[in-house]
Image 1: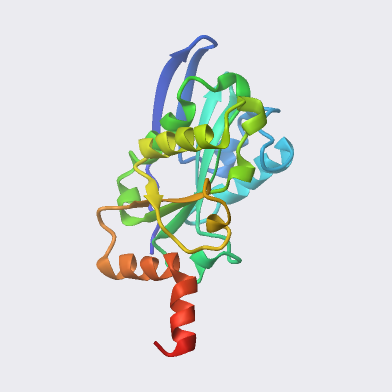
Image 2: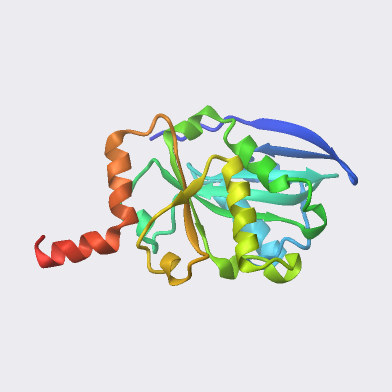
Length: 216
């Protein structure tokens, strides 16, 4: 599968002045920017910036960034699921994961996350993918936002909805380990029925493995 990437860019105004959302960006393009020091939800900022540049070089990897005065203040990543996760077991070329989305604290409140997701979906090739996002409450900035788990979940659902992702049932053990966790899914209009069926098997992999073990 050839993973076609079409660049898009939008500018919007904030109290800090104009900002941009743009991408997908290559590692060389990312290197032209500095990386905000508060983008530290997943690992130290310098290491996370290195990770984004690595993802950008994957065939399917996509980095969409929000920038302010040549500094990346937010981003969203897309890539194939981690080989250690159930979602990679089907070896589906048309399944990609929204791996991370993060916005520096002072730039929240300008719908940056929603803008990143909307811009992502302007690329017509995204209609060829099943896009998933695994939402775990322990990754959420509950302390910084002062939101309850359930209020944060509502915010996440609304933001993901801007990119067309909606909650979908699964029996993945990590997701069902807490009721606030969820699987978000967007199925592109060009995805085949065969791929949808294969994805449905992955969503309920535990149940299907149990049935096979019993010979059902």
